[in-house]
Length: 610
Image 1 (cartoon, rainbow, N blue to C red):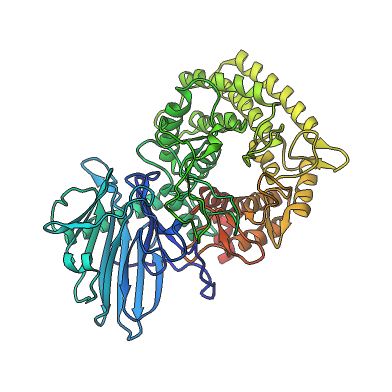
Image 2 (image 1 turned 30 degrees about the vertical axis):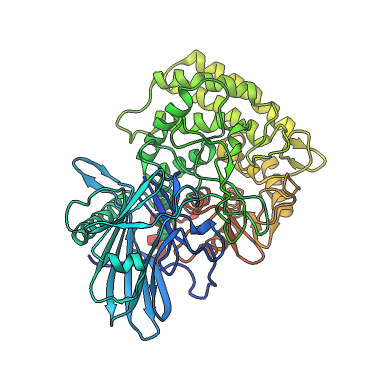
């Protein structure tokens, strides 16, 4: 297969713990270190038990990974194959011998449908000389409680625990793997990690075919994207990463692939993000939809139909990938935490919070189905009728206290952003009703929205501060206020919004990056910048006419990406150290939307080139 590697990031960038590359297929995903160690893979689903869990098991875990140890290791280089989620890691030893590891998770067409098994495929090829290697496979089950011993079969090794089993099918010497014996690499080796089932065919041939067809799938998917003229490679990588966070089976979209990567050093702010936040998912769907990847939107609407519209009572802010599964929060005490930062959390207690913005998140996501003419069958009155109760509930909740977008665990207030999202639910239902020709209902929704809008802007404005505030009648700012024009509550040219942008820039900017808020919360004063907030500022600066400042900040954020172009949730603005769950869908969304808003048009780009 021809190789077209991507080269990302400045070569002098110092290494970091979150220098990890993601591979996935919509069923499972894995994170791989620059030296080719797989140290995170939940299985057999994106939110499952991490059979490779070394990422959250201390600094130097001796379990929960698979790797290829090269004797006399000198250096490695890692890159994605062009426009794909197929990863290459080239390793060179001190004698100049070299090998290439190619990792992917199969995603391809088989029998008229998408084939995406819970499987990681590794191929090891000789590039130069005869490097000596050791193959180590040390899975853990039960969140670090079990370290199963491998049991050899004819051409496979089974790892069986009390509740699950995984099989490695390979053409490598089984005894060498079980004993972790050093040997000289003199031929290609294929390794397929998956269910405890027989691989139909020669492992090497199947692995090669899966890789080629998976590469072709991703190239075809990328070909269908509507890209901005500038920053195309950055947007492609972000879009693919968002696709990896979408669960094909149910349509749910993860906030990130990991749990318990802390937001900063020495903090208890570490949460499980392997679930579907209605708010985050809306922004993910919006970003992919603007790029032309509409199927993710359609699948997600199917998810919220099952997770939300079939349910009764209060909406939860976050749902499991399978709507009725448990999301109760507990601590996996057998794991030591990312770089020793315990606890490792499973589940998320935020599901119990009242976050009123979720009403708007659901209606706004569904609204796209009514107006997008690319869809074979746009939504009609039946879906509208199912959304009406959400609009009624949103209107009732708009001016009531909640935990807010930042999920404060120790307080409730009337948050401006939450109120604005409730307004958006009412406003969008008015637009949908008008689109469907329901004239009287449209007028009623529009009147309700107008009344609500007036109350929100009055409650959020602080005359003394000269800006909108995070909470009604309060003193303090948060970065979510930058989204008010995106929601549609007021235009970016409104003097109140311009004043709010300038106030946020003064009060929340730290060393060129934006905090989400600066006041102390349940865990003290925030130390790191929430990356998507800086993208929100990029958009706001561009909207109020400060495009040069917006481009400068955008380029600053891009410089923070890791060695393969991915972003987590947070960054220490002073050091550039990346923190937080990874890769964070919110951060990739911010990159996509800001690039599309800042980029010159294709016409402008070509004319300037000439």
